Each structure stands twice: as structure tokens, then as C-alpha cells.
Image 1 (tube, rainbow, N blue to C red):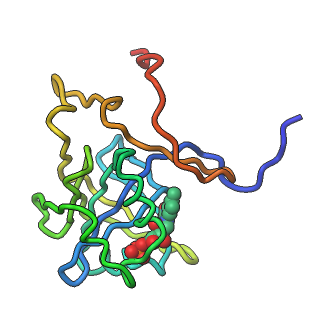
Image 2: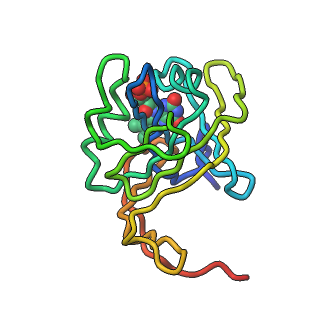
Length: 178
Ligand SMILES: Cc1cc2nc3c(=O)[nH]c(=O)nc-3n(C[C@H](O)[C@H](O)[C@H](O)COP(=O)(O)O)c2cc1C
């Protein structure tokens, strides 16, 4: 017999730092409930409406998605627990900008992308943010023949289903079949 578990078990999920610009200051929050869709041309994430990040989404209708490496765990823990309302998280990283100019990205992260908001879903306490991927940026040493060497990036994942811990990415076992 299977054990019944209440709620979501879709797991593991990537650890992402969503960047927004709020009154001219970059802010970053850990967003775990995130997914690419439309074959990766858009991304979707869930945002509790009390987050300071929500202020930034409304201000500029742009955001960034930054994938941190595990050596950034100290900063990730801060971004996932302290609000930009009380703490200046812009000082944790070196920031850079791409085409959008209002989607701050993190130099220390091996992978980043800038997105512009195309849709906002309004649920009880959560907003569903849909963004079009404008451009993505990778650490040069990670890209070979146009492919990103994910295993070299040192990325983190996190788990739902009651555990809610950070893990490191595992080993490659196969290529999907054509
Ligand atoms: C592993 C993890 C996943 C999280 N996922 C989300 C999420 O999907 N949506 C959300 O609104 N907050 C999420 N949070 C909480 C925010 O990161 C946290 O409240 C943060 O301090 C918000 O910062 P802000 O107020 O500057 O936006 C997550 C936190 C952790 C640790």
C-alpha cells in the first residue's frame, strides 16, 4: 500500500534567485516553485503577495532568474529568509544588467536569464508570474559547442514533500532518446 502524503510532491526543483529592481535597488529572493513552459520560451513562478519581490514585479514588469552554485549557500540562505523590506540584499552580490536594464542579475551565479512579465495570475494569496525569456547568460567556461555543462556549474536543487532541504545536483546517467 502506498502512503498518502498531503500536498505537492513534485520534487526536486531548481534553486533560483529571482532578481527585481525596486526603487533603483536590486533585490533577490529564493523562488523554489518555478518551471519553464512553452518549451522554455517562458518561465512561470509562484509569488506570495507579501514578498518585497512582488513590489519589484509591479514596478518594472521585469525580473531575472539566477541559478546559484553551492559555494553561494550562505547568500542563498539569506535570500530565502530575509525580506528586502528589512535587509539590503543588493550588497550580497555583484550585479549586472542585460537588454532589459531593470532586471538585475548576479555575476557570481554561473547561469542567469532576464525575463519580461507577460501574464500575472491572481490566486488567493499567490500571484502566478509568467515571464518571456529575453536572454540567458552563462559563465564562459561552462559552454562548449553551444551546450551548457550543467555538471560543472555546481547547481543546487531543493526538495518539497516535507523535507524542504537543499541538495547538490547528481550525476548524469543517460541522454534522453530521440
Ligand atoms: C527553498 C525556498 C523556496 C522558496 N520558494 C518561494 C516561492 O516559490 N515563492 C515565494 O513567494 N517565496 C518563496 N520562498 C520564500 C522567499 O524566498 C522569502 O520569503 C524571501 O525572504 C522573500 O524575499 P523578498 O521579501 O525580498 O521578496 C522560498 C524560500 C525558500 C527557502
